[in-house]
Length: 214
View 1 (tube, rainbow, N blue to C red):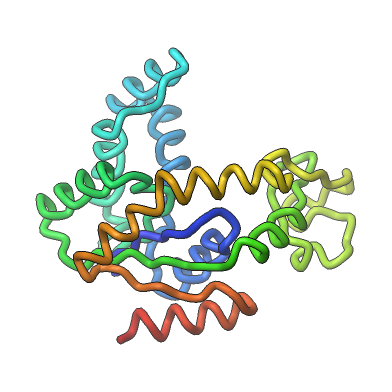
View 2: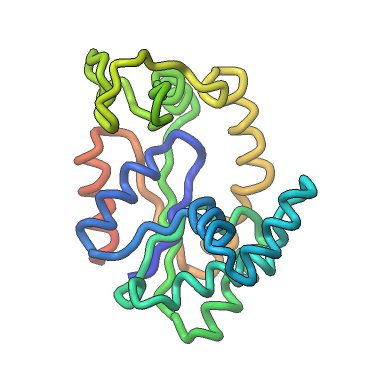
């Protein structure tokens, strides 16, 4: 099973990725994480990416595709993968399609999780991050506790700038303008599944499992 996890900030992609990764025994591939790993491991592509990032420039699509290729052809991805954070543009989607054809991977689907803007703003403004480990938690995950569930620190939590309402609205505008066209690209190919992200984590996951099994 090969999945592109798609949706605007705050729809619950990260939470669902963890559950799906565990249920299907396939890795959750965050493109940000694999880029950092390639840089830290000083791979050929990682060194190129670091040189570009050190100049303050964006890593070009061809390097990201190369890093993705290295990752999804690894033995850990034999049963599939969940790709998160790529593609963000139609050009990236086209490049990814070309890679899938080269690798003869035919079962790639885009899983689109949706939620209305008011719900997204409510969710994100209620998130808090640990001052020690920077792990992000929803208000439900913290449930009033003042100890970090990730590192057991008793330092206080804080709200990230990314989770301020004005910043969230701008992030949603950027998503709708630049990234949402990727959904249309996969819809035209009949390679997309849309799931309503409203409801509890368990309810949303049940919808996803049902849709993926059809």
